[in-house]
Length: 297
Image (cartoon, rainbow, N blue to C red; front, side, top):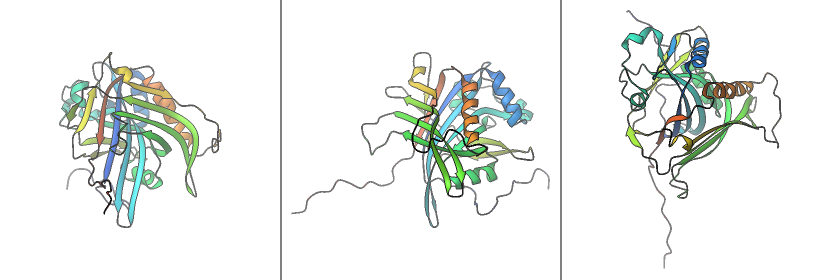
């Protein structure tokens, strides 16, 4: 046989991993390419940053998802800090697409994918799986979020989430009140369009320096909102703050939660004051509804 062997699937995991439900918002920023290229060379040396008219693209991706297992179910929240990138060796295979075409899924090669710089997650099992299966730089974090929901009719097209610092201990996730960064998105009244932009190729680099590519397929279209100078202020990315209160210990020493501070610092440095260029959202359709009761005479 010729070609590369497939990466192993360690126990107890099984692939593909099936999502039972997914609620997802991504925000893209077109930024100065220099700092992006430098960090990408350090974290993923086999990748090159995509060039969109002389700008690189940093993509912030919040997910809330459910998975069903033989013995029950699990709910996970996570945020990815990504750079849109491609294998440096495949530059001659890339189609010439601008940012809008990329966001709408016009790159059918799927070589333009997400190079994960940081993934913050509140589920220890998902942290282990992402690290071992896909070489994700995945570390503890936790979140407070407000999402559009059919179960809260007053919330329409408004998304927000705050990423908090966390660590892992013998008892599981250790939550701290420290806020790392926050995103607010008000999409009410903005024109959106359905886009088929998956499978998304997710890139990771393992401890041996080998580049992995793992596709994620979402089975229904996303909703894409292109932004310009008139609408970019619908997205607010703000740095975090230390909020006093129980569990807000200021220092954790060498605890893995320090990686979440590094993620926040990298995000602030790469994005700076760049306006958002686009927003894409996905919400799983409901599968059942329990209706209002009525009196029986």
